[in-house]
Figure 1 (cartoon, rainbow, N blue to C red):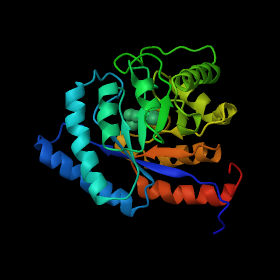
Figure 2 (cartoon, protein in one colour; figure 1 turned 90 degrees about the vertical axis):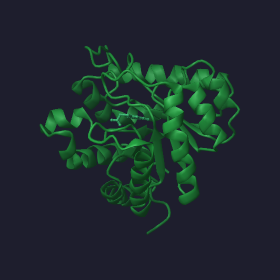
Figure 3 (cartoon, protein in one colour; figure 1 turned 60 degrees about the vertical axis):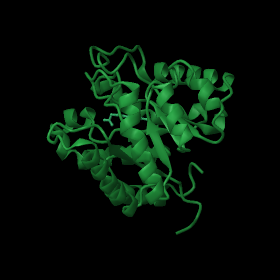
Length: 272
Ligand code: 7PJ
């Protein structure tokens, strides 16, 4: 296959939040996450995204210490076993600081580095990537009647202003990824407007990271429960990649990697 093909990367979501069906304790959680990661690595994942806080609509968050206790031991284990870059999904500056001490390759922040001290911290982290995501409101309340005049324009304005603030704080623009934040303070209609017009974000001249895997925007159209949204997730990933998204954040790595190979073969060099 020729080398000029579009380079689309798949980010696998590693779940560390205790699920309601088991009370297995820390070791079992860590062990389950490692087995999940191993499968993803075998399936060709490009990034592993590790988060210790549930940001699902309605959730109210955990303490920084709890997040650190969930995330950092897993980061250490992943680094000792696999040679895949690690992203840490967190909004908290203290959690970011711990992650950076462990040399992770990306901070993925659904709050776009708006926590006190986060921009300054990342400005000191040479070569570490940062994903700035748009969210209207906060997870606990964000799905209560989200409102926009034009969702694409407003999300773009927000991301533009966050990029400016991050650059002013000393973060290299070349380290920034942008994410419109599917499902974060958006109605179904808003989500599909963002997906349909995703190419509008190329105006900001930064790579895009997107996450739609298994989200309710897929369930609401297909009328499928969360464990039956694989086909819809692949369709959404394919559309985003065809519109030039660089990193696709997913649960189902094997299937998405295959789909992205087809997109890359089709696009061959278009966004290179
Ligand atoms: C996203 C995320 C997303 C980025 C979550 C879930 C909710 N990080 N973290 N983008 N979603 N950058 O996966 O359903 O869309 S948590």
